[in-house]
Amino acid sequence: MMVMPHTLPVLALFALLFVLSNNGAEASHKIYSRYQNLSVENVNQVHRTGYHFQPPRHWINDPNAPMYYKGLYHLFYQYNPKGAVWGNIVWAHSVSKDLINWESLEPAIYPSKWFDYYGCWSGSATVLPNGEPVILYTGIVDKNNSQIQNYAVPANLSDPYLREWVKPDDNPIVNPDANVNGSAFRDPTTAWWADGHWRILIGSRRKQRGVAYLYRSKDFKKWVKAKHPLHSVQGTGMWECPDFFPVSLSGKNGLDPSVMGQNVKHVLKVSLDMTRYEYYTMGTYNKKKDKYFPDEGLVDGWAGLRLDYGNFYASKTFFDPSTNRRVLWGWANESDDPQKDKDKGWAGIQLIPRKVWLDPSGKQLLQWPVAELEKLRGHNVQLRNQKLNQGNHVEVKVITAAQADVDVTFSFPSLDKAEPFDPKWAKLDALDVCDQKGSKDPGGLGPFGLLTLASKNLEEFTPVFFRVFKAAADKHKVLLCSDARSSSLGKGLYKPSFAGFVDVDLTGKKLSLRSLIDHSVVESFGVGGRIAISSRVYPTIAVSEKAHLYVFNNGSETITVENLNAWSMNTPVMNVPIKS
Ligand code: DQQ
Image (cartoon, rainbow, N blue to C red; front, side, top):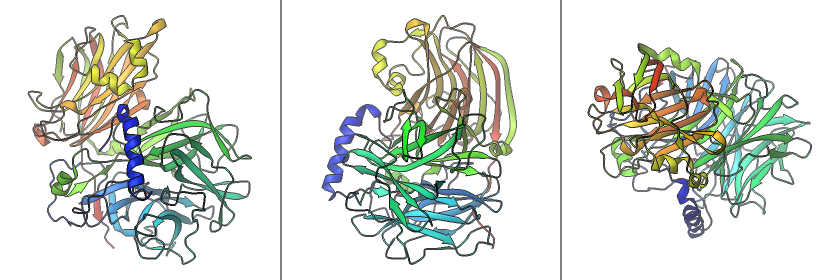
């Protein structure tokens, strides 16, 4: 279950108490032992996604070791082969030619040796200069969740499917030393090469200080801990799934992890176990000192920049040499309770892979769903120059509104009617503002946007909308919300509103939004990918053909839908077992 940032101090205390009451061992996922081994025969299809990545049944979490090898994309992921809650974790394995249609293989890595007998947790792939991939992953060696790092290599390099992986007997390759918390020491990154050494990061914590330990190796086997971590931040708790990569200062191309130099900035992303949210900073990697320095002015903590302001965790990027781009994968957990996950027989999806690159301002990353997704677009509906006065909602008809891709540009004649930004909100998180000023509360410039997964009479709907505020000195603040509070009449669900402020130039008096709607997920990208928010929702009426899509405006300023394209989305091949 996701949590609200305003409950963070309380959570931090709970997290600490949990850790202390657990002999200091951290599991990171909630354990529901009574459901862990209940293998599922009949999967409930109602909220299953049509084009998001998911296996036919059971639990999934973190994307692991995405990579491109001999013409195929490989995605591994944390998977429970025996049930729909976390447990019995193996590395499931799928391959694709286009990142959208996926075929499944047998699990690649599963507990079998003393060094991973109690679990094969997250990790990454590095494709060595000779083209050979190596996987680094965390092995769990006892019931206290003691963690070490292992490597695995393909059994047969001429097999593009990389079906079989070998875990050599000289594992583990990294053991925690006496100064490291051995039950909070996991999720090795992809390696990068600098000055005669490979380097990796391993996520950890020292008391409540989040840490990215740095290890160096000449041969990928003998790894030595650097004197200082690459980076650490007090009060952020366990850093899971760190990701560290270069981005180009010019253009949208991605970079191989080992690229350094003048034209490059680095990004450090961490997943905070205490909040189950992630944040990132951009900055300078000083390879002499082997330290990372975030740019001045960036928040290095849980109020920092986010790859996604919604349900998105344990993300990982990889460099795709076939298209010269960096691609991001993130996991979206269910927002329902484990009993319901068990009943429906599955839990978790991977969000649509996104291309990531640096905004020309250098102040944030931009993201966009990979272009291959557009191959799934079917029937297209357009709206042009549609005026929306206050209180209007207009249906976007004749598409499969439960499985759609919508891209819309709104325009407005002026900024004059923007509501004042209450100075008290400056201390609040964007989602607190969204909580106070939802989609129904009439405003000035906004709220306007989309009502997704809506029932005909609007008993249920998930609004994704902008509200523009005027702050001091004529500066405007643009809020994007994805608000699940009205998404379902279902009882006992977690229905959070998610939101973020977008840094955008309003001179053109336009705001654009793209939403990928897929039965129980609404994945939205504001202003050309300056902000992303993903919500999981479970409508009871607005399902399948009973789902509708509307554009709406509840602000006093008239809004024009300048241009809207909506497509019914076809269903790709999704984890059908590969024919051998
Ligand atoms: N999930 C894995 C861990 C990681 C966590 C275990 C993040 O390796 O820290 O399934 O969701």
